[in-house]
Amino acid sequence: MSTAAPRAPGGSADAPGRFDDTPFIRACRGQSVPHVPVWFMRQAGRSLPEYRAARGAGSILDAIAQPELVAELTRQPVDRYGTDAAIFFSDIVVPAAAVGFGVDVAPGTGPVVAEPFRSAADLARLRPLEPEVDTPYVIEAVDLLSRSLDVPLIGFAGGPFTVASYLVEGGPSKNFTRVKSLMQSDPGLWHDLVERLTDMALASLRSQLDAGVAAVQVFDSWAGILSPRHYAELVLPATTRLFADLEASHPGTPTILFGVGTGELLGLMSTAGPSVVGIDWRVPLDEARRRVGAGVAVQGNLDPAMCLGSWKVAAAETREVLDRAGTTPGHVFNLGHGVLPETDPGILEQVVALVHAEGRAGVGTLQ
Ligand code: CP3
Image 1 (tube, rainbow, N blue to C red):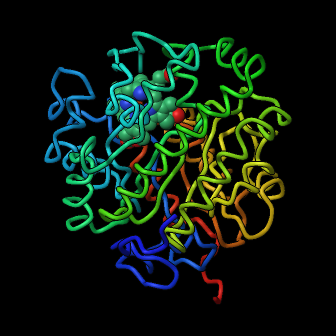
Image 2 (tube, rainbow, N blue to C red; image 1 turned 135 degrees about the vertical axis):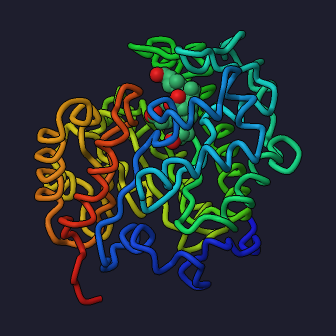
């Protein structure tokens, strides 16, 4: 693997970048901060009227291929909420769709696959991703954004289990029975599939870093459906390789690993080598910090449903998260999962202000 990749404009430990001194990047690295940084998963999207106005109808996969539109949709929540980072507007199925696996995104449903992954013959439908050829619009949009944004841009990819689950199940799933069966009945094929998806995620993340994202998040959103033993055997090795290969080509890049319902997996996820582990709302942050261990930051973990009612509830619950995060450096405030579509944007704006005013993790620490 190459260690001579172009330096990310976002910077790295040995090549300081434009955003190294921002609260978000500093918190990812466990350094002191002037205020606790905050961003929201799914901060762009259906809850913003300006998003609905700019997006219009049409498939999200078409929107994603328009760099000017992507730049606008990525900027909207930063302008509206005052978040400390932007999340690149795209989707985790973009690489698989771009190599022609046959993935579409159905409005109101999510990713759907016409011919799901069933056997070794389907591996041929997952050729390696060539970002310059297959997803040039991603590179162009990241380039546009990284030169014009005042806050760090977070790039992302889907984690190996989560992307595999869509390809094998054929769409969103509740019990993940088909993918779990494949993992158990044909571990060799599962291994080949996961390695291929890991290569794809790696190629995509490297192209985003080379174009200027300052940090990356791996969304293995549905990995929490697995037992610790199965996660350790069948998902962790590829995930560990993903972070090791990223560190080799882009040393010092802040990396985040996130999943929902991962309470029993947090210690394992931490060993995969990310700088930050994303925590959902089920595990209080003080306990999450214990499970993740020293030297790894945490991100989270306000229950998104707490933003659906009164400000009184949202404020009390935000303060609870801040209390649990304590004063130790290394907390990025976020929701425990994505913004719910029916959320009043005004509440999120107030959450950002409250976190900035009252968050204490790493604030005033000498380092
Ligand atoms: O929610 C997560 O766990 C984040 C990881 C994830 C993304 N896409 C990243 C994303 C997952 C699991 C997906 C799959 C997917 N794609 C779903 C979920 C389906 C299911 O199984 O429940 C859906 C609905 C889509 C399609 C999609 N992606 C839409 C309609 C949009 C537009 C915004 C919106 O929410 O309506 C997206 C954008 C998207 N997907 C972003 C990310 C990181 C960028 C927006 C942001 O994070 O601000």
